[in-house]
Length: 199
Picture: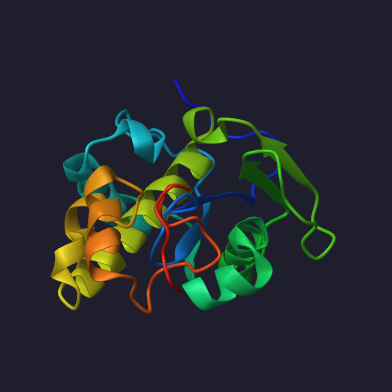
């Protein structure tokens, strides 16, 4: 059973990201403030949910949330500032979009930079412990998937519709065969060490 609240503040926001380990596309974060009495028996860490369940939960979260924000940080910025900083930047920019402003922030994972002097707590596996982080994980994942499905149409040979840019065997085989696209993260090891790739 996921918990509603960590801090006892009414305006507590949960934030999480998706796509950190991908070879292509953005890292996407969401921030969500849920009503204090919000409940949903299906909501959980997005990684534990089927795509169908995530897609069903997305409009419910958007309708029931007091406020939410979603942000993509694209591959050029990931290559420039590194994936950890890009993930935190995506979370900050998502929190920027919240109205009202949160009084407390709970973050999935163990890394975060202070945001506007608002107290925060990092929580390992927070997306399977707190509803607002789980909601943020669902929104981050679904919005990122929508984006990856769109750019799949431009480069169908990488099958991003299926692998969403993650380093699957199929994705790496396609990189080996076709090279890289403007959507690939050049700062990532796109192929195993033994396979050279000209960038």
